[in-house]
Image (cartoon, rainbow over all chains, first blue to last red):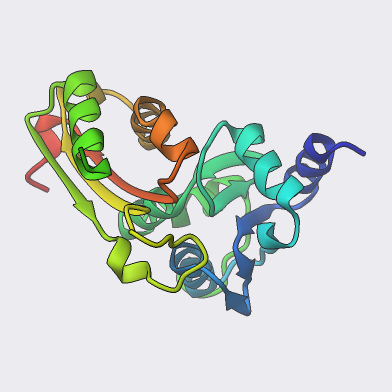
Length: 110
Length: 91
């Protein structure tokens, strides 16, 4: 399976996917860590994929989304944004709204 | 010319911003994986331009990233972006 197919499969078979540095339990980058905190605060289930484990994945995800930086958040197969966008959306209540609209169950502040 | 100056110049030429503020935050990331000796790896951009009017957040970021593609491919490791249209700047 090519890396593009692997990524495509991951974002389409999981409701919420975060491509990040490190893993949700131990983020290895402040920007990835911020997105983890926001998702944990909202209380959605998500899959974290550690790009530091594979340079192929790290380069592949940048090509896939045509987005040069990590983290990258996907909801229901759709690219939502990186750290700044996720934070702005969360602060405006738009991220919570997006999860609700997409039918993603949120635990804490839905 | 520092990387900060290059970023400021390129964004100014591309977007004719009403306001632009580029901060080199590399020192905050010393020891981090993306850090390099000499710094100039981590930047924060605040830009207000009519170019962003009617554009989504993703579109705005893509516009900035495209303008700085060469820098992002080279030594710039992280770029925090806040891009606003003039009417939004007060909020």
